[in-house]
Length: 367
Image (tube, rainbow, N blue to C red):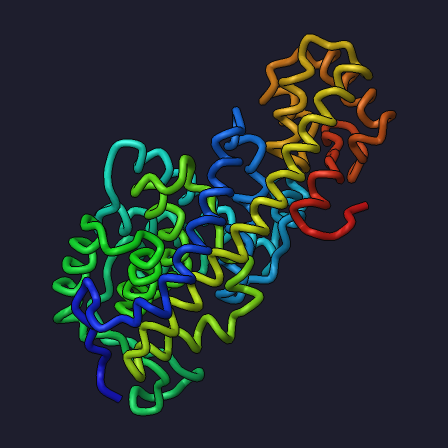
């Protein structure tokens, strides 16, 4: 199989009559979702479980098996070794890359140097660390069944000798304004995946770039629009649509798939953000009524940003004196806002969780 030869961007010959109806619907749902984001005073706190879910699901597409609550348990020190620990570390790296990207993009555009740095964070101290973290590939690679030759591959990315030129053309496309931003986002993501510039981690970097690009272009007030839930549940269609480009040059099918994904995921994201906002308001009132504490908001933000936690971490993050903090936690356990996962013993801190928020995040009943 010959290496893939990328199409020149911006694309020509698209079926705009077919795509524009989808563009309109997807843009409308995304705008409704961003309207909700703009109404949240502290989205980094309230929506941190959704950011973690994105890290978990995007990593799951690549083969990891950990769940959101398992990652939170690792944060609280409950998972220490084994394959699960390695999976969780990959997810935590993904979350770290998302946070680092948001800080970077507040002042600067997406560049190839920025993407290399994201990749370095993503593969730091995990199973892909031998795959040249932060470096574009210098060898020809291919995708196929384990042990297959290049002739048996299902996809062969561009020759590494031309890769830098293709990447620079891709970077230049990001700095332009195509006929529609969501259409451009679809093209941006697919072209990156087809260039396959790293030896490992391309899918995760490509999915991180979706909210970051929308944020850079000011379609989002915060880079918190995550597609991996839809892509993970439609994994076969996702890969088939990308293969349609590489095998048949079928960009229209891919863009239609992507726009439909944005529309459906934006609706779901909006529903869950409303649920989280409602829970936040309910808990704000309940915690105030039960504790009558001046620290009620600090407590509320702490359990939203970290819904599984050690009591020692809670004390450190809230800066509340230990006797007062432990008293507040006891009151919230009595009110069944918090549940104990691990009792304290000697020097070992107790581990508590906030089941109502985990139920929204995991989309299943927790405890």
